[in-house]
Image (cartoon, rainbow, N blue to C red; front, side, top):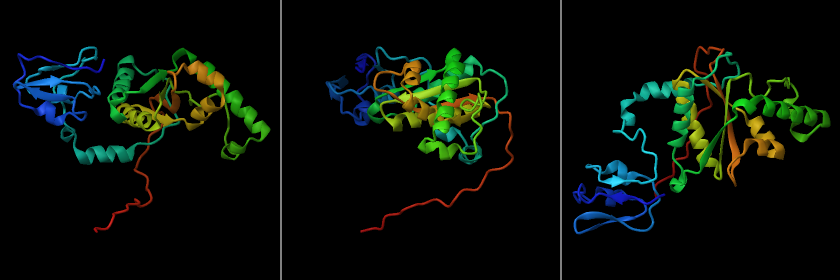
Length: 258
């Protein structure tokens, strides 16, 4: 799956792929790039080759067109949009189009992962959404009645029937072996959702339910060894914010020179 193939007739021996290979899994032999053991399938060689001599058999190459550099996005506009984002808890009763769901998932697929593990998965609750939310609501109501330790967080909360998913039409659980990889994918997905006019809420309470209740974990059918890292509640916002809120000053630690 992770092995690359070199078309010798197209390879010009420039060595760009060799120099950029993070795993040192390429070398030049007789003026041609040659693969060896150790490839992690990151695709840098595929992306950098000026003649398209590199192939990655078994990988989905749909949409692998010429790159769009980040400099194509105005940095001031991007930063202002990032600062303008809000967690959305009020949604319109409007379904999210399949095309937009595909773009959100594609953004998560292309988020960076350590050692190019690509070990993040996405579970769309779909028709099971209401059933799963009902179980979560029952669990939390029981916990409140029993005086569980985390109840203090909920002392003013109305645990109604839509407490977890807020009536949103789309819920995606992002899971993985590694929390950092799944969190990075979630951030990419949220930014993409925002660019599509959608609002997002991260439901930490739902992830807590998934940790507490084995039946909820079973319903999610997560890949073996995965844990639910984020639960993304997505839909068209039924609320409009007018200005960027303040934040505390950044905590930046600059190490002194020796």
